[in-house]
Image: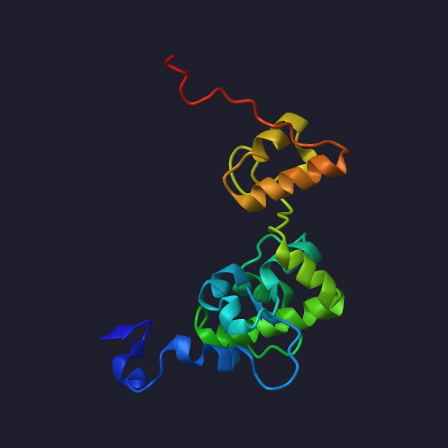
Amino acid sequence: MAVHHILDAQVADAPFWKEIAATILRPTGRIDALAAHRAAFEQRYCPPRFTGGTPWICTWKSALRVWPDLPRFSNQMLRYQRMPEGLVHEIGLPAHRAMPDAYVTAHHLRDLLNASSLEQLLSWSRQPGLLPRVPSGPYRGKGWDQLTDDALEEFGRDRDADVRFSAETELSRRGKKLEPMVTEPAQQSLL
């Protein structure tokens, strides 16, 4: 049997993740941050009890801020749009595998740290993603600054935290706040 092309025989004698995670995620010496592209995914498997509370840099959220003019922000799309210096194409393949993706992410992280401070990247990573453009619907591809206040208020109530945050950020830039939604109670009192 195989999962993600990892054969049972390859991990037959391996310890469980919960037994070794802290050893891997808390190496000897100083560690300022962990990093991943879409770090929220990794954080599900690397909670604070394994990381010792080490903060995370999300290279996706940081790329949204540092390179907002790029059309896409996936790890591999950033690779081809940016062509990071020193990245050896073949080492970054095949895409969507742990080592090649980590290699590509490391190049983005290096360039992000050259463009912004560690503290700034950590700050952005704690917030939802600030999308440079509307991701879907009739306004897809438009910058948030091109939308009306009413459209921004509607996006400010979206289910997606990144969409809400992006709309609220633009409203705030305009000196406005998202108006609270007035809702009727789900059911009127029977008495």
